[in-house]
Image (cartoon, rainbow, N blue to C red; front, side, top):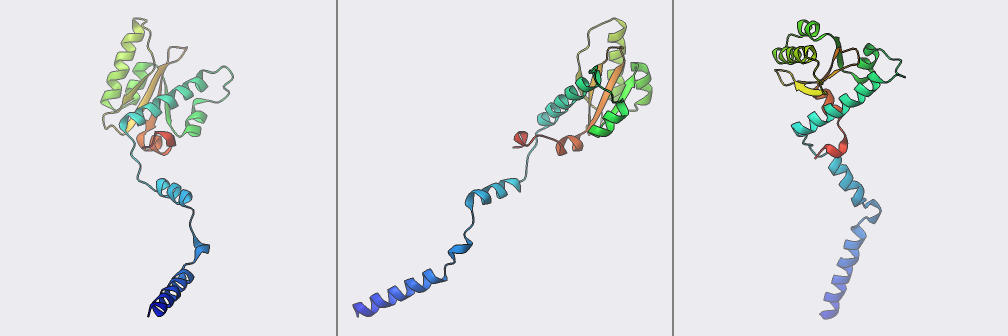
Length: 161
């Protein structure tokens, strides 16, 4: 009885091991990477603002660089953004957004009293676009318009949580 029980256990063990196909084992580290790449990502509003600020600084350096041979239209196409340049009152007439008009009024006043104006990030009224605003050497206001969806598409992977 013990021999038959032992024999049947041995046969069942051999059959169960034989049914296992070890040639199709998956690489667990690759599987974990794949799962993380397909994971739903969360991007915080501050991450979007930080990316717009970083991106705006890079474009500002490019525009102000003496070796820059590109026009504003070429830079706008290259980065897929909207660029407007001119006097604050002229830009105010071109922009229909109330919040951006208020910012341009404030910039016009600050320029009239010769105040130092650092670059800034402003949201439009709808909140779907961000504007990086700076003053160039000719005292013209330059608006770099970023849509939030474009920023999300170009955001750095380490910032994605």
